[in-house]
Length: 188
Image (cartoon, rainbow, N blue to C red):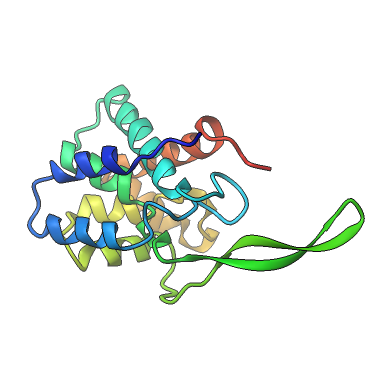
């Protein structure tokens, strides 16, 4: 039985002292944030996977902050760890796909991407969050670059510059990778 992460996430976010935080929480509660998968077919590709992944990243990220003695406010850890993938809210839909199983083609229900705001990944998360709350430069850059070296090589210089300014940028990237590849089952 899969765990429900909604109350834990809402409890942490409710403690964040930020103007309009109530509006951001309302958005999360009225969107599919707590029901969406984390991906279409890789890690946590099932209902509630996004919330589970967010919780996992938050916890690993918190550990990285402590391990490397990084100066990052508790509220910032919560926002970046829990909401780095807010871009996946209202992003996945149920659909049908023909798949070959045991040599036969069958129609199967799968998760598909239906992106109504094709804004990118990290930058979309920053954009969505800033519709509700103000982010510090450090928070915005940390969320923007959380995908690390999966970004196109043409932007690696910018990511490196962000990480040089704020080492926490790489801590979130590492936490995201650790959660996806070591904490969570791959579902393959």
